[in-house]
Length: 72
Image (tube, rainbow, N blue to C red; front, top):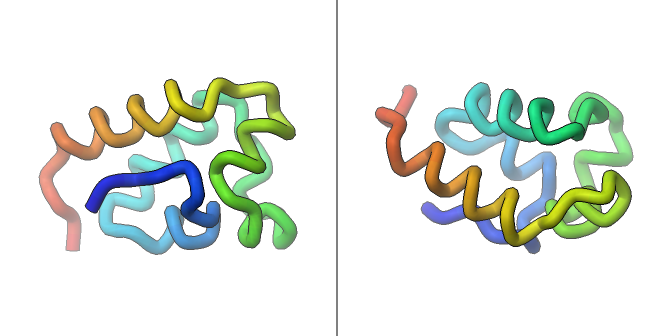
């Protein structure tokens, strides 16, 4: 499954390898993953709030996940 910029932060954190996704989001400057409001934001909305290039982050996340084994 590919990550897209219209996916909700809450949805991203329920995917397989969520720990890797969370770490990548935190490393990019999104330190509010536990905030209830952030759970309903799209990745694109969160990137706008944090001044992050969404297309670059989506590419980075998908590259990271492509190289990871699926966690159960």
